[in-house]
Length: 222
Image (tube, rainbow, N blue to C red):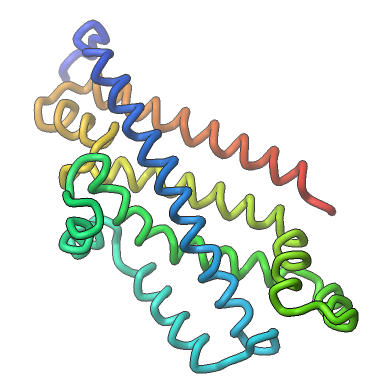
């Protein structure tokens, strides 16, 4: 077995790859929340017994979400290459990785949002309705504040999932630590690079989960 020697590592490359991973993670999380949150709210509102109950709308939206969630990310990245090129002009590197990350994570996050909103006490919604609140006011002033802890937990889970997706993106030309691990750790058989990238990803996940857990505790009303 080849000996691991950290002196063989080109640390500036590790630094650049870590920076690329953080950029991909930050932007894809932001766009995932922007896309997934309204979809999750629509799923909840159009479901049975809710303010905009509509069986057809819920079934169609739910089907789209389920289909996108069922496609493995590595295959989804390949399928959406034409769309990715239209959106950002390339399908490789940091820019080319963000669209498939968002397309893969937004349905997942939307379903988590729907689940969080279902945890809101029905009596609170009915009280807001009895006071004459509009549907938009109920969403903005009742549903979102009351489900805040659950939404933060959903963002944390999605963010941690995106870390693994960013690493996976390296197999087909994505940027960040994933491509570094594959190019040097696997193709050039430099296990020290693989070890360092895995350790950085583990630390990143641990930090994200810790921050998310603390925010959930802080904003939880229970």
